[in-house]
Structures are given as structure tokens and as C-alpha cells.
Length: 77
Image (cartoon, rainbow, N blue to C red; front, side):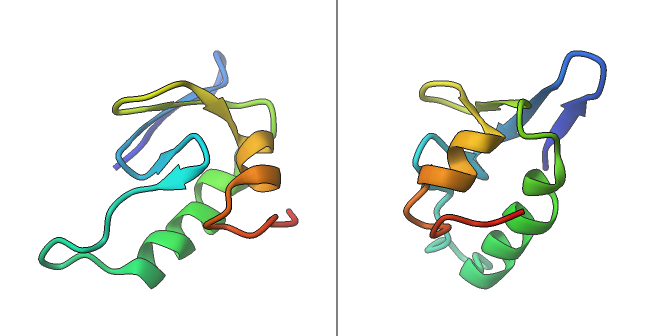
């Protein structure tokens, strides 16, 4: 589950996406394909200047993850 603040342009991502990484899918009911699809179709549909605030670790931005996240292979919006 993620929360997006439209006016402030920040998104609380929990453990879905991290700076240059993604959430774990090796837990029961975890699904790699669903996670990648959610990131590409939901988080990457936000404006590129949206700040992503993960459950832990450094903040990042949609534009940075599209370009540099190795799990998402340079997604083109």
C-alpha cells in the first residue's frame, strides 16, 4: 500500500520500492511479477519529480528510479 500527497508531491511507499531496489517477494504470497507491475503502473505513473519515501533507507524520486533502478531496467514512461 502506498500513499500519495498530490499537492506536496511525495509518496509514502513502505516496502514497495527503495532507492535502487524493490521490496522482497520471497515471503508467503509474495509475487515478483505483481510487484514490478504495480511499480511500473502505479508509482511510475506519478510525476517524475515526486519524492518517494520508503519504509526505511534514503528518499528517492520517481525520475531517479525510472532511470537507475536495476530491477526496473530503465523504464521509459
